[in-house]
Length: 144
Image 1 (cartoon, helix red, strand yellow):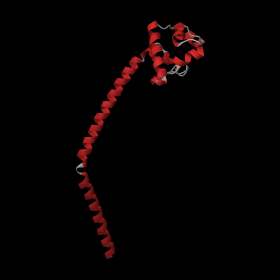
Image 2 (cartoon, helix red, strand yellow; image 1 turned 135 degrees about the vertical axis):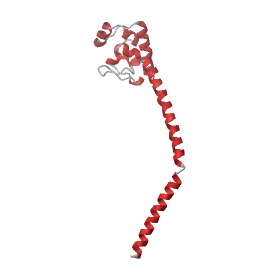
Image 3 (cartoon, helix red, strand yellow; image 1 turned 90 degrees about the vertical axis):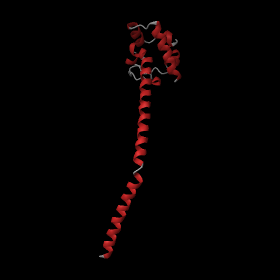
């Protein structure tokens, strides 16, 4: 009986000591942890704001692909542009087009040598400015 009582006293003392130590050693950490948490959330907000600004700049830079409906059929994955899956990804088109169609990209966009693109371009011809911008962006895409 005495062993059982001593065991209960030991267990109670252990729990109280453990709880007391926990509260004693963690009392100052909450202020430090709050400061660290505030600093981390401030950094996260700055990073999110920078990412948002860069996404807006990127979307403005690549708007030409939307205005000419390129992304309806094509993606440009190296520029992070998701699009349709009907046509091939245009990431390497700047370097690959000559081998596939025998003309450079600018010439292909003026007078396509594929049946599908002929129909698309005839129905919605590109201005010289749009074509030059698309060629420049696809050159950039092939270098990514």
